[in-house]
Structures are given as C-alpha cells and as structure tokens.
Image 1 (tube, rainbow, N blue to C red):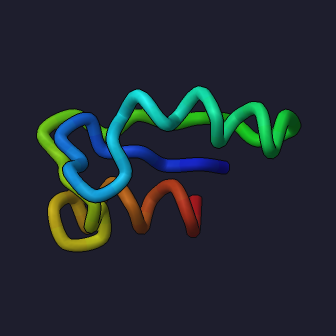
Image 2: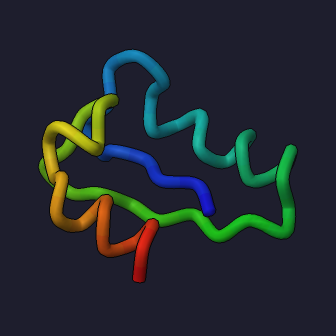
Image 3: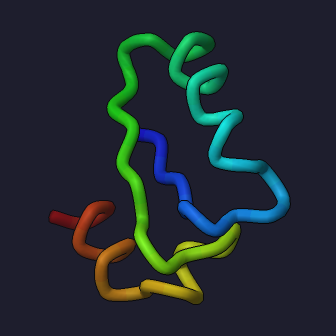
Length: 52
C-alpha cells in the first residue's frame, strides 16, 4: 500500500506514478485535503487503512 496526499509539498503527487512503478504490486491510495503527513492530517483514515 502506498498512501499519497494530494497536497503533499515534500514528495509531489506527480511522483506517485514513479512510486507505483518501483513497487508494482502496491496499491496507490490518494488522501484528499492531505499533505505529506497523512497520520497528522487524516489520522482516522490512516488508522483505518493500516488496521482495517
């Protein structure tokens, strides 16, 4: 699983394509209204994805 914030200014959203090329078996999950720190910007969604 690769989680990416659409407003990430550290690793730009345009770099997500490269990440999925490097790990082709991973699923890319977008976080709306979220920057680089998904666990801070959207803690409930992040926890739900990690723990189910």
